[in-house]
Length: 520
Image 1 (cartoon, helix red, strand yellow):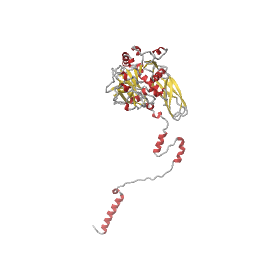
Image 2: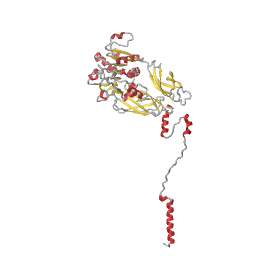
Image 3: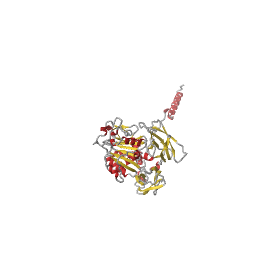
Image 4: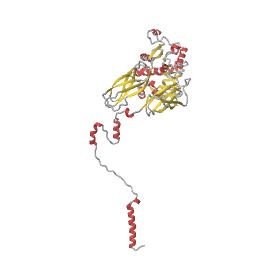
């Protein structure tokens, strides 16, 4: 979050038996209340947006809570906390374009509206005099002085003819990323990008390999709609998140309007992370589906490739809702490391921020060597420790490399004790990832009666389901019933008393008969 900039925070509330009652959601930054929002319970799950404006920069705990309402049975599940970082700076973006195509117009408009961003634009085919107007967002030319260029955090290069840029400017952009840790985004176009940059200093930093046929790379728009789909990496990437949860975000992506053009490239480079692809496998290559959005670490900085200039089509029927969210997150991902001066060789992420006791914690680490090549070690050691206990014992964790993803490692462990933790690597303990582990409290998390499941249990067992207010009907449905129980007793013949008696009778009869007949 940015200081003095309004931040919308989505709070998910689940309630039962409180329909029609009202309460207030209170938002606190640390111990200071920063916002509150009324809520009227409707039963089930509700998503409430609470807006607040952070006034202080730094790392804080942001908590949302609701005071217990009248007759509430469980009062221990009315709050949730997560970490937040507030910065006091603006992201400086340089947007370079050949001519004002649709993609440029919409991206320029949303970046100019964003209070977190200080935007400067260069139109190669525009009138240089527009830069002379007061508060003009335009520059007359692309900076030729490295110092001037390096003041930016992010360079967005559109469908620009590379002949309009000198070899020195192209090399300066390369160094801006590789040595200074700046961000770069190339947005493909039908005239020049990315194919025309073959053999230039920018070809090296792109996360994709250029197609051998430049004509095919700049093929005309298709009349057939093109669907895009998230890769597994894209599904878990916060940069691509269009909703609060991964599942909801993936569902939104699957329903976005189609595009009608994407650039043909050979494949993604080995160190690149492909986030979005053309869903049609026939438009890909022998290496897989065609990359539409890919990102990679290049030296000290990050480079993103957008293989379509049709993202403005995703505004249909919803306006800026998803289009602005996506581009805002891309800009933040590429520029914030340079703005905040974070480490470029170690990037730690978790599959989510908060975990329940006993839940599996998954940590991803993207690691590079001192030369900014993907790390290729078989094992990497890490650990996590409680932040509230300075003398807490470190819990060692092993990270294993992910197949077919150079430099990418994963660690998994079970959250055994509640508290605030930090995860770090033994190779550099200064780079940490905060983790929160809380009691699962499954009974307190959802206290509503699961009526469908209870009815199913009653049906399967041959019984009936009654709510408390219907118990008076119970005597009428109970019927006395006598049942005959059949049982079988198996007895061995030779152990039967009847058999013994019969034997005695036979023997005795024989003896008496012999005596009577005077037989021996």
